[in-house]
Length: 50
Image (cartoon, rainbow, N blue to C red; front, side):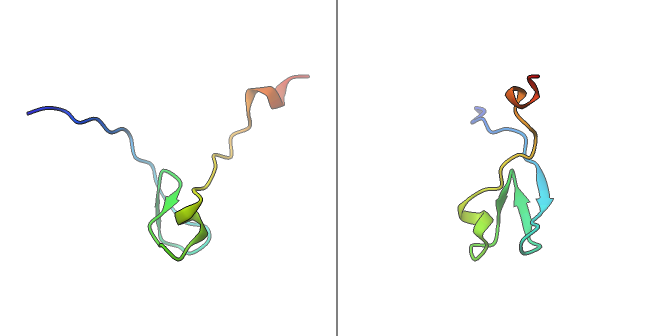
C-alpha cells in the first residue's frame, strides 16, 4: 500500500451560512466561501515592521 499524501484538515463553521468549512472552503455550493475560500486572518510579518 502506498501513501498518497494529503495534509491536516481544519474544520470550522462557516460565518456566512453555518455549514462546515474545510480549510476555509465551505461545503455549501450556494455560499460565496465555497467558490472563494476564506483567507487566514493572521497578519503578515510585514505588517508588524515599525
